[in-house]
Image 1: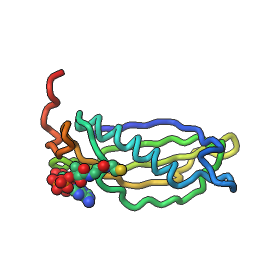
Image 2: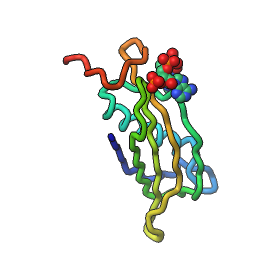
Image 3: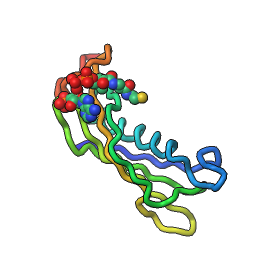
Image 4: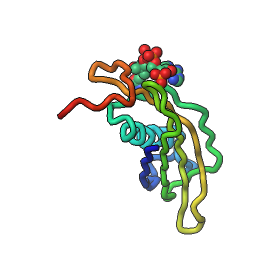
Length: 124
Ligand SMILES: CC(C)(COP(=O)(O)OP(=O)(O)OC[C@H]1O[C@@H](n2cnc3c(N)ncnc32)[C@H](O)[C@@H]1OP(=O)(O)O)[C@@H](O)C(=O)NCCC(=O)NCCS
């Protein structure tokens, strides 16, 4: 199954005045990296159709280094489910899981219509 991962440092513009990262910033990262995993598997443009339950278990702070790991865990006819985990670490604390969720993507053609995942990509 396909995987994608990225590292991202949390800057002050990603946080509220208390120094915690905005949930929307973290969700955006999850969606972005999740889509990379889906596109890798489908070899097609993929759009997000569902963001499953996401729980923010541990606060993410300015200065934390985030590792976002996305793995395709289900392939349907045109849809794919991707499990996305966000780990945080900093100079004082070891890497720990902060947030996890499942996102579903649909492979689409140039008109945005669903297409089967296993269909080969058009020749370039
Ligand atoms: C995603 C989209 C192309 C699906 O179109 P649709 O007409 O609902 O397509 P279908 O009914 O044929 O469903 C296609 C697949 O999506 C799945 N799906 C549709 N709605 C779903 C939902 N709410 N949750 C999970 N899966 C869903 C179907 O189960 C199907 O999967 P399968 O082929 O693996 O069995 C369409 O809803 C769309 O364009 N949505 C907007 C996407 C977007 O802009 N995303 C960015 C958000 S800002």
